[in-house]
Amino acid sequence: MTGVRVRDDESFEKALRRFNKFCEKTGLLSDMKKHSRFEKPSDRRKRKLNAAKRRNRRVVRMREY
Image (tube, rainbow, N blue to C red):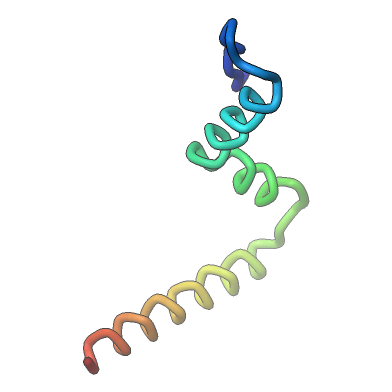
């Protein structure tokens, strides 16, 4: 379970901000969104293929300069 301890001189808003930053750094929210619904294997392959194409286009663009 993820959590942060509230310090004595800290407001709730600051503790909440620290918690949100911690979740963002660990990738917890993106992982939850990814697993929130079932993804068919064909859709997963399509998504990964599109991501690889985007990466390759970026590499080719960087090599042109």
